[in-house]
Image 1 (cartoon, rainbow, N blue to C red):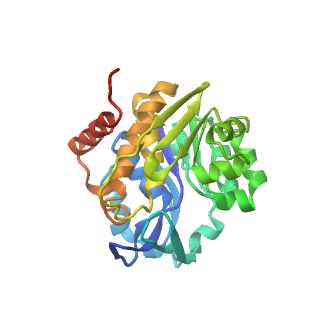
Image 2: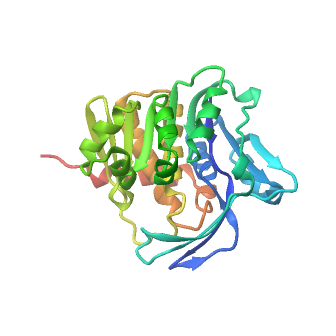
Image 3: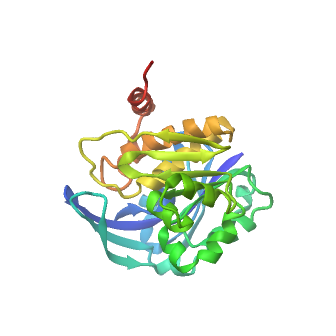
Length: 304
């Protein structure tokens, strides 16, 4: 049984109050796959890069035993590139450059060795690409998790609603949940969104944690208070990768397992923001992860 991560594999150039970078590895699939690899040993990526991405950057995945057979390399073309500058509050940012390059006409190809997938994360791409990848699988995976954003709600809402009918879990942030549902209350928003198709909904609230809805239950997970957030890029993708990686590891998709998966994803996301790009995610230890999860447990442990 394998876990597929579909999404962008890209270059980012970032500027935050703590410094700036030249081009570094980024993209939703990059963050999610690295996070998932700490939970599960059968992670496989589907994405596309240009000739400029290079073997050195691809080796970042191979070192984590991530299968990169599904990464298309377009000779003579350039990888997707995004550049952004974060404001002092680190919750808002300005996009400086977006170059779609190879991502502009990305056609997701499913290698034959990926057809045994029991779990799939459809990372933040156009709903049309997400649906195409799902339809190209010979059998529907046990769990389909979809991540999206307000951009697709603005320009491809009908396509998004179409694929929502075919997924099990949707992960979005609070602003996107309000936009998609037309409701300000997140509880009411969840009720509307769950009627669109998903069985479970995760609403990410950044420094305020995350909410899990499903089976007529609600779980509220805290965010770990950090003294410094160095770079929030990729935190949501890291969360999603840790979430589905944990579920693949325990091979369970019930609400209680998802509660634990939310904590695991939150713990990994808290590491992601400590350095630029994927740097922190590339070099974690099991002990660090276990200690971070214990820190989350202590945040809300109490007796009455």
